Image (cartoon, rainbow, N blue to C red; front, top):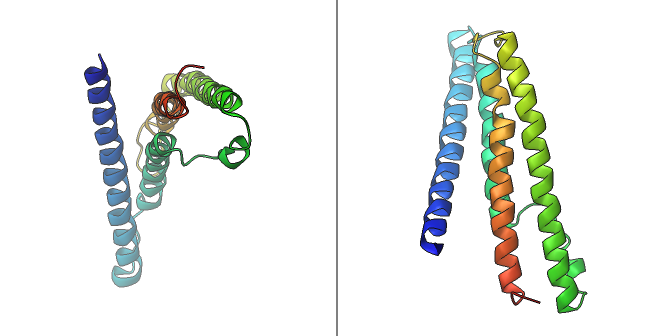
Length: 164
């Protein structure tokens, strides 16, 4: 069972890394091309700013998931270190619970938004790309963050000494 879990998290890590690498790489190329076209060729690409914005949104959500894994999100660890061990363990569980709950709420609310945008058939102004693709970053990132917050909570709990 633990080997399958480890395999799942390794796959998720690869997916996050690939997502960040591809989105930031493409964004860099698109912005470079825009600068080149604007200042060297004296004409701009009408779709470049829009594409780079959507790539940045996806990169942020991939990165947020990676941040949840590594514990880079806002925390009060210095404050909780003042507590006795049993209170620290409770704080870890409470913080983990609310972090996962927040991500799940954002997932469901953003999925509703994506569904509504999908039904309207709205497209982006410059690229005429379906707008739900840009908005899909929020539920996708939220569910990845929920998984990573759960993983981080279990790791922190075990680090504090496991069962109370």
